[in-house]
Length: 59
Image 1 (cartoon, one colour):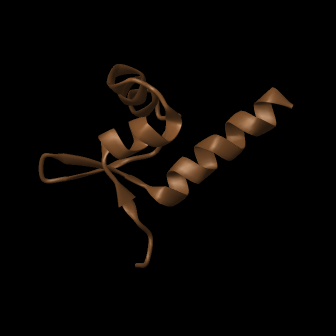
Image 2: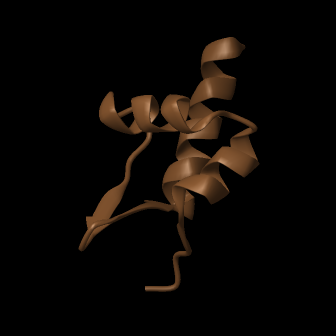
């Protein structure tokens, strides 16, 4: 596989956003994630895609 899975607190720290904002992004499907058991994980590639999309929208 080779792709890192990030926890919600790790995503919060990288984006400098609050917990509810990160969960809103996940809920609205703007940030892709997966659930393993009861744990929510965000693939590092999904976070990169989200950031790239935000940069493209801002340009």
